[in-house]
Image (cartoon, rainbow, N blue to C red; front, side):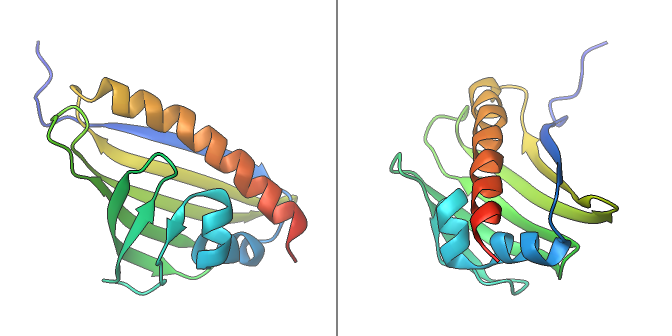
Length: 143
């Protein structure tokens, strides 16, 4: 049986990070810290706030804050307009922070990749691993 064309894929990255949720939350929501691990931005943690993420590769992502629950959940759209349907991405990124005895379990899910967006999906899988490595570096040097 064929899968319906509406079925989408998600990239999920999960890490146990040895810092409290409040410290990770700052890195997820303060523009100068977001720039250090993700991209240049004009982010504000306000539902409905529209902002851009500007990549070193020249691309601009159009985003809108969907959910803010301090130290617990952050969700925003992650859209990239492109003439080629394989790259024309409309997705949602959701961070979930769960306190643990060792720090925080951080889960990121980027959902909304269509089956014909294999290259964008693969790029996101590789990209989020790099973003998380940079995030952990930022957390190590910030108080």
